[in-house]
Length: 185
Image (tube, rainbow, N blue to C red; front, side):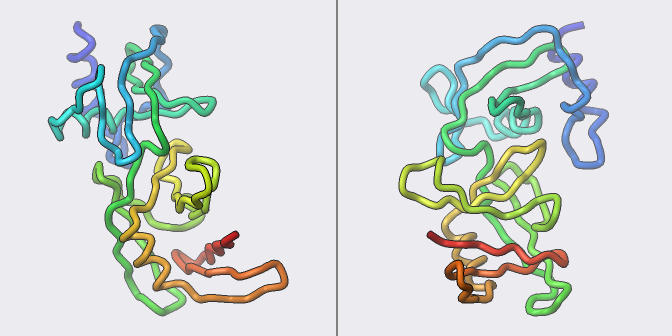
């Protein structure tokens, strides 16, 4: 059976998350591949952009992170790739029950992942990915982060409640019963 046939069979067994169960796979073959996920989340292979959306979506469905490194992982192999900042770009935001204690914020990635901002998908600011910039991130899956696009972050900030504390200014974002405080430096 070819690797692609095995992958196709595994993809038929999609988990409830809508993604293959890469966390259950322990392939023997480990190698590197010349694939880069750029800052804008375009995929580059050997210097050329991968423009086939279905192929990018297939690759994104088998993304895996281990020991701070990113991989494409199948039952047969685990291939190390390069990620410039984050593997996911959050491109859409929807809010239900806005302004109430039950407010819920849903984010959608450029690959179609939908996550609810909450305990399993916290919001943070990171200033180590790009020098002198605080990048808004949300956990997407398997410990991998998604970077909020500028327009999504602008929408999110508009929902926040500003608070001045002895430690500085905080913007509180409520979603899924959890307050996500953002401290700006």
